[in-house]
Length: 216
Ligand SMILES: O=C(CO)[C@@H](O)[C@H](O)COP(=O)(O)O
Image 1 (tube, rainbow, N blue to C red):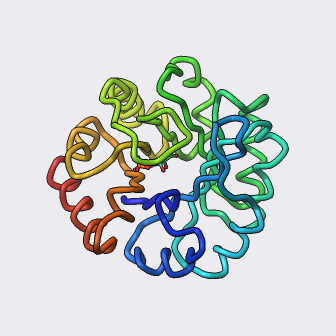
Image 2 (cartoon, rainbow, N blue to C red):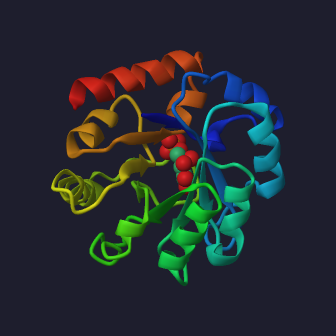
Image 3 (cartoon, rainbow, N blue to C red):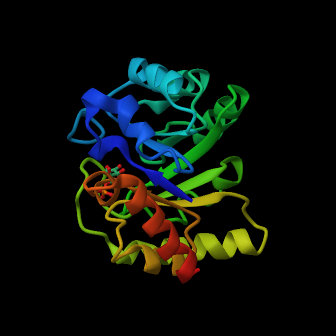
Protein backbone atom coordinates (compact mmCIF):
# COMPACT_ATOMS: atom_id res chain seq x y z
CA UNK A 1 0.00 0.00 0.00
CA UNK A 2 1.19 3.51 -0.83
CA UNK A 3 0.03 6.58 1.09
CA UNK A 4 1.26 9.87 -0.40
CA UNK A 5 1.91 12.47 2.28
CA UNK A 6 0.26 15.80 1.57
CA UNK A 7 3.00 17.57 3.51
CA UNK A 8 4.82 17.84 0.17
CA UNK A 9 1.70 18.88 -1.76
CA UNK A 10 0.58 22.40 -2.65
CA UNK A 11 -1.69 23.33 0.28
CA UNK A 12 -3.55 25.89 -1.85
CA UNK A 13 -4.63 23.12 -4.24
CA UNK A 14 -5.25 20.16 -1.97
CA UNK A 15 -8.26 18.82 -3.89
CA UNK A 16 -6.25 18.80 -7.13
CA UNK A 17 -3.25 17.30 -5.36
CA UNK A 18 -5.43 14.47 -4.04
CA UNK A 19 -6.80 13.90 -7.55
CA UNK A 20 -3.24 13.69 -8.85
CA UNK A 21 -2.69 10.55 -6.75
CA UNK A 22 -6.11 8.97 -7.24
CA UNK A 23 -4.50 5.51 -7.39
CA UNK A 24 -3.22 5.85 -3.83
CA UNK A 25 -4.39 3.37 -1.22
CA UNK A 26 -4.57 6.04 1.48
CA UNK A 27 -3.90 9.77 1.52
CA UNK A 28 -1.59 10.59 4.44
CA UNK A 29 -2.64 13.83 6.15
CA UNK A 30 0.06 15.37 8.35
CA UNK A 31 -1.52 17.31 11.23
CA UNK A 32 1.14 19.32 13.10
CA UNK A 33 0.57 21.72 15.97
CA UNK A 34 3.94 23.51 16.39
CA UNK A 35 4.18 22.01 19.91
CA UNK A 36 4.62 18.26 19.58
CA UNK A 37 6.69 18.99 16.45
CA UNK A 38 8.37 22.24 15.38
CA UNK A 39 6.07 22.77 12.41
CA UNK A 40 2.47 23.85 11.83
CA UNK A 41 0.27 22.49 9.06
CA UNK A 42 -3.48 21.99 9.14
CA UNK A 43 -6.31 20.84 11.36
CA UNK A 44 -9.86 19.57 11.49
CA UNK A 45 -11.54 22.13 9.17
CA UNK A 46 -9.15 21.22 6.35
CA UNK A 47 -9.64 17.49 6.95
CA UNK A 48 -13.42 17.96 6.81
CA UNK A 49 -13.10 19.75 3.46
CA UNK A 50 -10.63 17.21 2.12
CA UNK A 51 -12.99 14.38 3.05
CA UNK A 52 -15.58 15.92 0.74
CA UNK A 53 -13.03 16.53 -2.03
CA UNK A 54 -11.66 13.00 -2.43
CA UNK A 55 -12.70 9.36 -2.16
CA UNK A 56 -9.20 8.27 -1.14
CA UNK A 57 -9.31 7.02 2.47
CA UNK A 58 -7.71 9.61 4.74
CA UNK A 59 -4.86 8.45 6.95
CA UNK A 60 -4.62 11.26 9.50
CA UNK A 61 -1.32 11.38 11.36
CA UNK A 62 -1.69 13.60 14.41
CA UNK A 63 1.67 15.05 15.40
CA UNK A 64 0.07 17.02 18.20
CA UNK A 65 0.01 17.34 21.96
CA UNK A 66 -3.04 16.06 23.84
CA UNK A 67 -4.37 13.67 21.17
CA UNK A 68 -6.70 12.26 23.85
CA UNK A 69 -8.66 15.50 23.48
CA UNK A 70 -8.47 16.10 19.72
CA UNK A 71 -8.23 12.77 17.90
CA UNK A 72 -11.91 11.79 18.08
CA UNK A 73 -12.89 14.80 15.97
CA UNK A 74 -10.86 13.41 13.07
CA UNK A 75 -12.62 10.05 13.34
CA UNK A 76 -15.98 11.80 13.41
CA UNK A 77 -14.94 13.82 10.35
CA UNK A 78 -14.64 10.59 8.38
CA UNK A 79 -10.95 9.76 8.56
CA UNK A 80 -10.31 6.13 7.66
CA UNK A 81 -7.40 5.85 10.09
CA UNK A 82 -6.42 8.23 12.89
CA UNK A 83 -2.88 7.84 14.18
CA UNK A 84 -1.74 9.32 17.47
CA UNK A 85 1.76 9.40 18.90
CA UNK A 86 2.59 7.05 21.75
CA UNK A 87 4.82 9.80 23.18
CA UNK A 88 1.84 12.16 23.43
CA UNK A 89 -1.14 9.97 24.33
CA UNK A 90 -2.08 9.90 28.02
CA UNK A 91 -4.37 6.85 27.80
CA UNK A 92 -3.65 5.07 24.50
CA UNK A 93 -5.92 2.12 25.23
CA UNK A 94 -8.98 4.30 25.87
CA UNK A 95 -8.08 6.44 22.88
CA UNK A 96 -7.97 3.42 20.56
CA UNK A 97 -11.35 2.23 21.81
CA UNK A 98 -12.85 5.70 21.39
CA UNK A 99 -11.46 6.03 17.84
CA UNK A 100 -12.92 2.69 16.83
CA UNK A 101 -16.25 3.58 18.43
CA UNK A 102 -16.25 6.80 16.40
CA UNK A 103 -15.88 4.79 13.18
CA UNK A 104 -12.19 5.05 12.44
CA UNK A 105 -9.30 2.67 12.55
CA UNK A 106 -6.89 3.43 15.38
CA UNK A 107 -3.21 4.01 14.68
CA UNK A 108 -0.25 4.34 17.02
CA UNK A 109 2.98 6.01 15.91
CA UNK A 110 6.42 5.82 17.46
CA UNK A 111 9.27 8.26 16.90
CA UNK A 112 12.70 6.86 15.95
CA UNK A 113 13.88 6.92 19.57
CA UNK A 114 10.83 5.14 21.00
CA UNK A 115 11.15 1.39 21.41
CA UNK A 116 8.59 -1.11 20.21
CA UNK A 117 8.79 -2.80 23.62
CA UNK A 118 7.40 0.32 25.28
CA UNK A 119 4.15 0.10 23.26
CA UNK A 120 3.76 -3.59 22.51
CA UNK A 121 1.20 -4.17 25.27
CA UNK A 122 -1.18 -1.51 23.95
CA UNK A 123 -0.76 -2.43 20.29
CA UNK A 124 -3.37 -5.17 20.50
CA UNK A 125 -5.93 -2.36 20.69
CA UNK A 126 -4.65 -0.75 17.47
CA UNK A 127 -5.22 -1.38 13.77
CA UNK A 128 -2.05 0.29 12.48
CA UNK A 129 1.49 0.88 13.74
CA UNK A 130 3.27 3.84 12.16
CA UNK A 131 7.03 3.54 12.54
CA UNK A 132 8.67 6.94 11.98
CA UNK A 133 11.85 6.66 9.94
CA UNK A 134 12.69 10.37 10.43
CA UNK A 135 12.12 12.72 13.35
CA UNK A 136 8.55 13.95 12.75
CA UNK A 137 8.09 17.53 11.62
CA UNK A 138 9.36 17.95 8.09
CA UNK A 139 9.36 16.26 4.70
CA UNK A 140 12.47 15.61 2.63
CA UNK A 141 14.61 14.17 5.44
CA UNK A 142 16.92 11.17 5.11
CA UNK A 143 15.62 7.71 5.88
CA UNK A 144 16.86 6.17 9.16
CA UNK A 145 17.48 2.46 8.41
CA UNK A 146 18.04 1.67 12.10
CA UNK A 147 14.27 1.79 12.71
CA UNK A 148 13.84 -1.30 10.53
CA UNK A 149 14.65 -3.56 13.50
CA UNK A 150 11.35 -2.37 15.00
CA UNK A 151 9.58 -3.20 11.74
CA UNK A 152 11.08 -6.70 11.69
CA UNK A 153 9.98 -7.34 15.27
CA UNK A 154 6.47 -6.02 14.57
CA UNK A 155 6.26 -8.13 11.39
CA UNK A 156 7.16 -11.21 13.39
CA UNK A 157 4.49 -10.42 16.01
CA UNK A 158 1.90 -10.03 13.24
CA UNK A 159 2.97 -13.12 11.34
CA UNK A 160 2.88 -15.27 14.49
CA UNK A 161 -0.61 -14.02 15.37
CA UNK A 162 0.38 -12.01 18.45
CA UNK A 163 -0.72 -8.75 16.83
CA UNK A 164 -3.15 -7.95 14.04
CA UNK A 165 -2.27 -4.63 12.46
CA UNK A 166 -1.01 -2.86 9.38
CA UNK A 167 2.64 -1.81 9.64
CA UNK A 168 3.29 1.65 8.18
CA UNK A 169 6.54 3.50 7.73
CA UNK A 170 6.93 7.24 7.28
CA UNK A 171 9.92 9.39 6.42
CA UNK A 172 12.48 9.31 3.63
CA UNK A 173 10.65 6.65 1.62
CA UNK A 174 11.71 6.89 -2.01
CA UNK A 175 12.97 4.72 -4.88
CA UNK A 176 16.28 4.18 -3.06
CA UNK A 177 14.83 3.17 0.32
CA UNK A 178 11.47 1.49 -0.23
CA UNK A 179 12.90 -1.96 -1.00
CA UNK A 180 14.68 -2.30 2.34
CA UNK A 181 11.52 -1.22 4.17
CA UNK A 182 9.47 -3.74 2.18
CA UNK A 183 11.97 -6.51 2.91
CA UNK A 184 11.73 -5.72 6.62
CA UNK A 185 7.96 -6.25 6.48
CA UNK A 186 6.25 -2.90 5.97
CA UNK A 187 2.68 -3.07 4.60
CA UNK A 188 2.02 0.62 3.92
CA UNK A 189 4.56 3.17 2.74
CA UNK A 190 4.05 6.86 3.40
CA UNK A 191 5.90 8.99 0.89
CA UNK A 192 5.80 12.75 0.47
CA UNK A 193 8.57 14.36 -1.53
CA UNK A 194 9.23 11.29 -3.70
CA UNK A 195 5.64 11.48 -4.93
CA UNK A 196 4.76 15.17 -4.93
CA UNK A 197 8.12 16.53 -6.05
CA UNK A 198 8.03 14.19 -9.07
CA UNK A 199 7.02 15.56 -12.46
CA UNK A 200 4.25 12.95 -12.56
CA UNK A 201 3.04 12.04 -9.03
CA UNK A 202 0.80 9.22 -10.28
CA UNK A 203 3.72 7.62 -12.10
CA UNK A 204 6.01 8.03 -9.09
CA UNK A 205 3.40 6.37 -6.89
CA UNK A 206 3.08 3.38 -9.23
CA UNK A 207 6.84 3.09 -9.48
CA UNK A 208 7.13 2.95 -5.66
CA UNK A 209 4.37 0.35 -5.54
CA UNK A 210 6.22 -1.80 -8.06
CA UNK A 211 9.52 -1.54 -6.17
CA UNK A 212 7.81 -2.52 -2.89
CA UNK A 213 6.03 -5.47 -4.48
CA UNK A 214 9.26 -6.71 -6.07
CA UNK A 215 11.10 -6.51 -2.74
CA UNK A 216 8.46 -8.37 -0.68
O1 LIG B 1 5.17 12.96 8.92
C1 LIG B 1 6.06 13.24 8.19
C2 LIG B 1 7.15 14.10 8.63
O2 LIG B 1 6.91 14.44 9.94
C3 LIG B 1 6.09 12.61 6.85
O3 LIG B 1 4.80 12.20 6.43
C4 LIG B 1 6.78 13.35 5.78
O4 LIG B 1 5.94 14.28 5.21
C5 LIG B 1 7.24 12.41 4.73
O5 LIG B 1 7.90 13.14 3.76
P1 LIG B 1 9.10 12.51 2.95
O6 LIG B 1 10.15 12.13 3.95
O7 LIG B 1 8.54 11.32 2.25
O8 LIG B 1 9.51 13.60 2.04
